[in-house]
Length: 245
Length: 116
Image 1: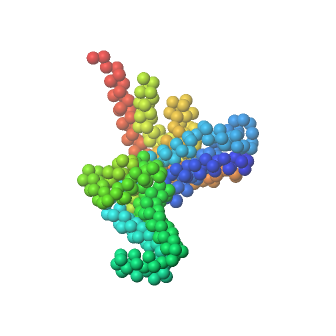
Image 2: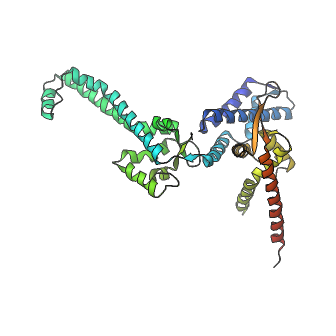
Image 3: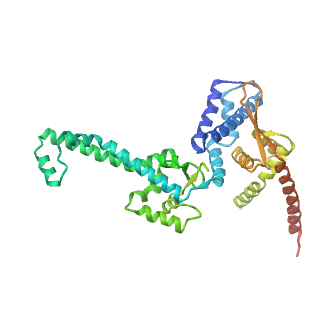
């Protein structure tokens, strides 16, 4: 049976939709996708045969998609079954990931502040006490003061972006941070599907409010030890799992 | 009422998926799409299993070592198929399941026929 290029593209489009919504490792992912590819091909071939054609067209590929479960449904179902087999990550591995991430945030902050530090040295800022710094600032020309102000403002904004963006953007987009990656951890929704930005914001709120993360972690250790969820994980419906044993 | 019945039917199907899959794979090595099609055909769509339910169940059964799988090239132009084969452990487990199923059915029959 021959497949038109358009039909093949349609099938690959369905597959990429499944891939987008599953959060399992490379080899296992390839296995799932190959099996589904074979299913979509078989179903499309069946459709073409049913209408008496020996070329599978895009119409057959679309009918095949309608006759078997939708890609999203398939992905969700896979992740639900995986969720039951995944081991939840406990306190220690998550603490190590947290320390790694905070070191990374510190390093990134230093990098984005480097231009400001460079400028401070270049312009001969005394960096002793506040009075000396103030006197130094007052002695600057208008151009000098404006340049310094802009660079200092840009550095402050960049540090804020690093601090707030790190957990939210990385977890919201990839489902893990560098620290979690090193420790073999992933953040998933409790039904096993990928988390989005909404979940990433909710579960990380306690990291941004004064020491709330300590209380939040204590809540996990005391009340949700078996579920291994912080209070804000409960609110966001998320869990941290181990993808390597 | 209808949705209550549907909910119950879903539970019933969920509980018997593993047995249905083992029963079919026990007859001969089969690939996923073939399994779902055969199940619908032999039960006149009463036991229609969607791909989204069948594949995760098959993968879990593979983890439990009740079945194994292998890839096989088929006709030209078609991607290889993943075939499932029952393991001795799966066969033994299916035997036990079948015995329990019969016992359960008989018991349910008696319950339904009970007149006080």
